[in-house]
Image (cartoon, rainbow, N blue to C red; front, side, top):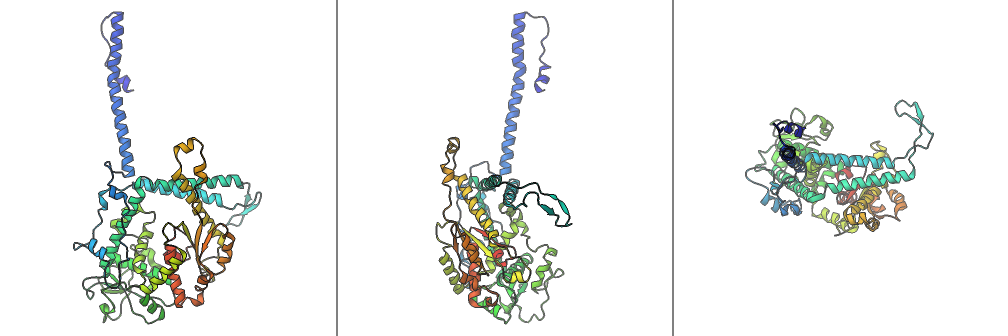
Length: 518
């Protein structure tokens, strides 16, 4: 169309010889085509530039070379230095500024990947997992009658059943998709940049919590009091502390433990670092009756409020309750992490759950026993099987151990598939060399089992030929309901939480507070 329009102005006029006319027509054609070619060439350049700009914008890559330092994983500024004696020196030196809170600069490097691109990748990964779940589903035998779960009416005969070859093929395809999508999220230094930026946000939250929990003048600071319920479990109590600390963070209050004289709270005070290194019960002495934190008092100027355990039941009515995250880091978290609320909850858990030296020694001994922190160790999957009173109270059902093993096996299968995507080369594919595929093993398959039911280890023996099993029936016995108030039971529970948190993948049910804390 462009060429046709341009040719309208290139018609020859007047009589002319045949040869001259031929030359003229040839020149005219060249002259007429020249603008067309130039315009098309310019159009192609603009199109290619627009496409490149679109890709750069979507992927978030900076047009200039990335800073080399941004591709190195930096040291974490965790809570390891925070003790009862004061702030962590590194955090205090590098993060607490007199001018208030500020977001890190992130090394002046553009985000490694665009938000829309990352959302689409995660969505594709979820769909790949759904394909895998379909491949693992147990279908009724052919010609069996299926009842509708709601109406209990016959819906007809089943005429489908997945054959074993097709199931195997679908499983392989799903694992390959998941592996490649995972690699897509790591390519071109994206994973390292993501880790560095998440670490920067972690340091920011750490500095804010330290500053919030240690105000200049405790007697004038707004406070939020919490305590331990004598009949609640350890992990359940920690979740409640995290919930209240988030409300304190959002409303600018310092969270303190209100003194109560019962064995559970006394044990907590003896074994965990205080929430504040400056403020204590003297900060709210003489306050009299302390009103509850609730919807009407959420943003009030009342200096001291009490965060009651039952408040978590109203979490859906509280806009700043989990899974909400601070607004100034929400967009960045959405880009860096698939579950921003879970990430922020983890920051709160790290602050609340800081064992003192004696308890920390017990945790370190358990880690050493199971080799959790051994350099270069193979991948370990953590499995927490919660039974006993959870089943008795109806909070969760009893799931056979084989159901857990389905997901344990999937993780190791996925690891091997990821390894194949790392070592494969174009030459190997073109030459049909399958050695890269056959040798892509991940070493011994290891899992750590934590449970309150010793019989789980009897069920796990079925898999002992293919898996190295860490854990013991003795540790499981210490988690029995009648022993949970004993010192050893509580210490083992704390150790299990830290061990599970350092495994590479966790399989559990949502009824397990302990596993969700890990």
